[in-house]
Image (tube, rainbow, N blue to C red; front, side):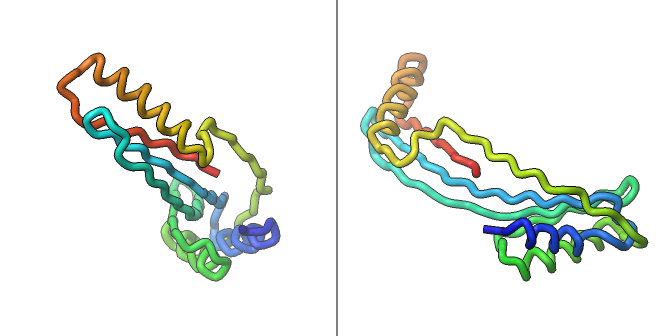
Length: 143
């Protein structure tokens, strides 16, 4: 996890050289996919993604870069490179960081809940198009 001190360091690296604004976006996403074939539950699998983006604005130019490597050295390099994408020259100001967590309705790790969801989605789909053979459902919990 990136600390507030580290985020401040990343923002300071992104600012300067004429940058008017900089921000950091960090995303962590867990996914679950349930797959039914011929009206039978076949597969349940999950995944995990995380990454960070750095945006800089200089006048009417915006630079944005993204990476899956959220280590501090990687994000400091990315901040420096993001400045170059906006053609930066001069001084800027860092804006304060505000944390915000959004809680979704993903049912966690309870597989019976996923089974019920795919059954309900399948019933809905198969009632409207009986020729369907496969129905899949994907849920994501973005943190």
